[in-house]
Amino acid sequence: MWTRKKFKGVAALRREVNPTRIPIETKESIRWLENLKQSTELFEEPSQYIHIGDREADIYELFCAAQEVGTHFLVRTCVNRLAGDGDHTVATIMDEVVVKGLHRIEVQDSKGNPDQAVLEIRYRKIRILPPIGKQSRYPALTLTVIHADERGARKEQKVD
Image 1 (tube, rainbow, N blue to C red):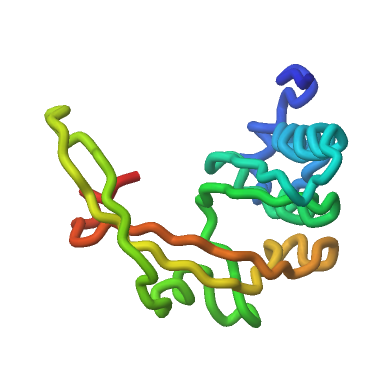
Image 2 (tube, rainbow, N blue to C red):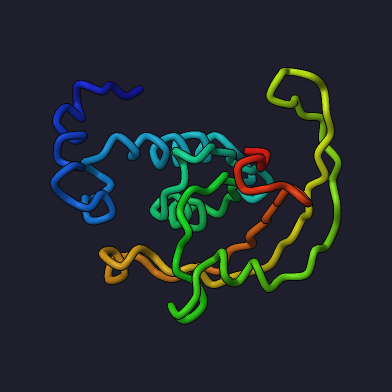
């Protein structure tokens, strides 16, 4: 269990300091790591489970914690992280990856009418670097990145 009272004032601090420089232990985001560790303790074979998180779970420390306890994760990212030797980002590397498959999904248009979108699926193992302010504390990780992009969509029309 966690409570926001414990993290009172963190939002104000975020306006003054780059959030990646604030230790995870003092942020509300610590709940993602605690949940991963607590739930993994319940598993007989952590390597057989996958923790799933939304954009709020796009936390480098969470990626490290999952590897430490020997479990897997799938997170919808919101951060375009440094990758490779630090001279690229995940997005620039994924732009070079060949489409490996297509997936058709049901969506709704702006009026709520049913429609379909075709997603281009790319994937690749990439060396991901920790945020610059945390590179002395956390290692680089090799992660499999899965990228789904709507085929033929204009930027403002992309499926989110």
